Image (cartoon, rainbow, N blue to C red; front, side):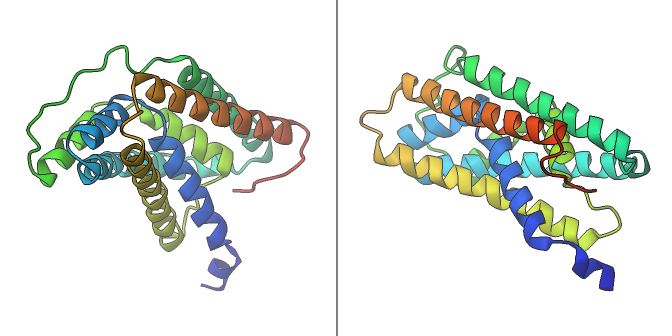
Length: 222
C-alpha cells in the first residue's frame, strides 16, 4: 500500500481529462449529431447525446487499458518505451492532420424533428459511437504517450477512467453551451472551423511531445 502513495494521482487525473477531451473533441458522426440536436431540440438533448458517446468511449478505453496492462513487461523496457512513445506521438500527429483536413459535414444527415426522450437520445448516440471501434487506436496512442496505464493499482486506474469520463463530459458540456449561445450564427462552417482548431491543437501537442521524447526533454515513466 505505501507504494500507492508514490504514484502521482493528480497526474493520472490530468492525463485522464486530456484523453477524455481528445477522444470527444473531433467532429465525427456523434459530434455532428450532438450539434444538430443542440440546435434542433435544445442544449440538454445535445448534452445527453454526449453522455451516450462518453459511455461508449469509456468501454473502449477500458478495453485498451486492459490490453496494454497484459504487455507491461514489454512496455517497461526503456528501449521499447521510447519507441512506443514515438509511435504514440506519430499516431496523434496523423490523427490531428486527419481532423484538420476532414469535412465532417460532407456526409451529414438531418436529425429528426421529434425530440424523443433523453434516454432515447443517449442510447442512439451510444450506438453510433460503439459502432466505430477505430477509437481504440486513438486511446492506444494517448495511453502510450502519456503513460496512462498503471498495472497493479486498480484504484488509480479507476480514478483515471473516471477522469476520462470527466474530461469527455467537460467537452460536451462546453460544446453544447457554446452552440446554444451562438445558435443564430452557427452553421456548417462553424463545424468545420471547430474541427480545424481541434486538429491544429492536436498537431501542435503531438509535435511538442515528439520533439520532447526524441531529445529526452521530459520523460514519462511507466
